[in-house]
Image 1 (cartoon, rainbow, N blue to C red):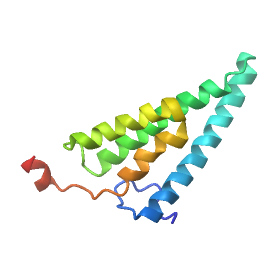
Image 2 (image 1 turned 120 degrees about the vertical axis):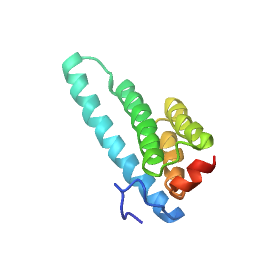
Image 3 (image 1 turned 90 degrees about the horizontal axis):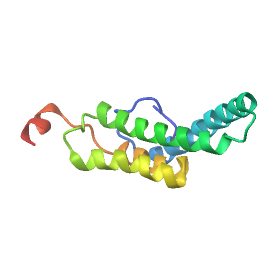
Image 4 (image 1 turned 120 degrees about the horizontal axis):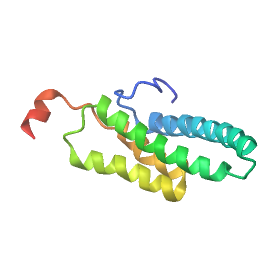
Length: 119
């Protein structure tokens, strides 16, 4: 379930995609909590929630586009829209929603160069 978490070109099964989602959600929550705590001490203000949302937007969109890059799917417009949807979902739902498109993208097959030349 949790194998090859850092290999973004690996085609995952549904079970492995759920493991990917859970692992990256946990990492995102830890990173957001640490950054929020540090900034709250420095700024002396409650900025933890805002930091969490910003981290979720950047991470969800970044991970989605990284997966597209590794799987060579930039010639597929619907995959690019899905990666952008990750950022939009992260605005409203944080990492919980933003990582769903990324997890789905991990289940897609890697595109070969011959497929890209036909499109």
